[in-house]
Image (cartoon, rainbow, N blue to C red):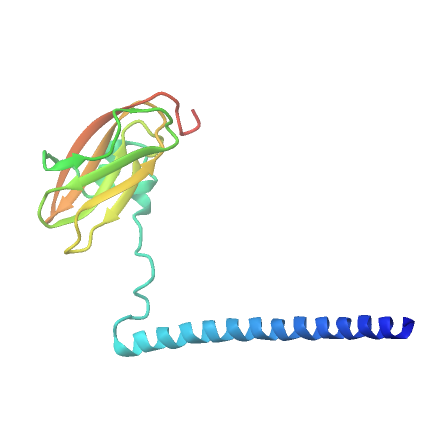
Length: 181
């Protein structure tokens, strides 16, 4: 009986080792097939001309505009020295009072034809330019994001459309600062 108990334990240990080895092989094989399949699809997309090499890279960003510490400098760096006031730019889902300046929701909708980009600037932040969104042709010019605000301030939505710049403003009161305040 002792010998048969030992034999059963030995058999079970060998079987378990074999199963783990087989599963490891199977998992490695699945990973290889999955990644190989992705490479084949990517190659087919490039060969068909639907995906151009380098098109997935991020566009160059305007470092000078993001490094400014003054609203006028930021507007100048964005190429919008004297933007026209517009009622066709609407702040959507943007609160009058933000309880926490670390996460202030901002929504902007542009009803201006041929909108090319929308920038969000915050007047009293250490760096006024919070975000710039390029709007591809044929896309609805609407966005929603969250920004940090140091204190109660005017928020500017700067829209570039058909080579011209337009702006709309909204004051948001902040009860708890988000930029180190």
